[in-house]
Length: 153
Image 1 (cartoon, rainbow, N blue to C red):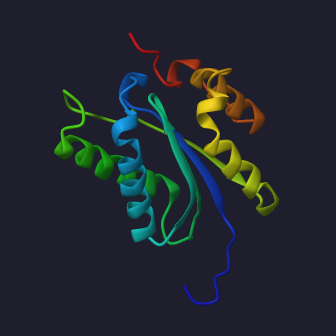
Image 2: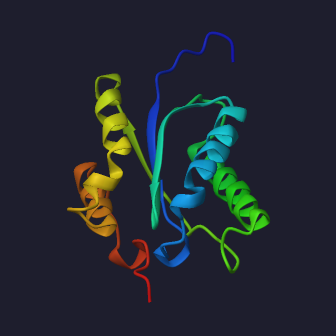
């Protein structure tokens, strides 16, 4: 789009179905590279990506050529297919429905990048569900507990 100038920084957070701890250290870097490729192919710029066994954080600069929901649907669909084709799980891998999307100003970029890179250390102290609720409250997002990521059974 000619004469369109934007500065949109988004952190997206999502989880494997039922918040199962399926993202393994052996292949998580390959997953990060694959997802980075999907996002870059759509014209956006990944600033940081990291995952824990039960969830993923992606921080990226977003172009206004598609909606966040469209992009996340593509990322989750294509990466699920890739994980299954690679045979990384003993069963069919799926991402949980939905995602968190949080926007940041330019002044917060380095803080968010550092936060994402420090996930392993951070989650020694805070659970994913507590972290996710904190994001929702910090960004003043009304939510229904029923629709928060399902606790593993």
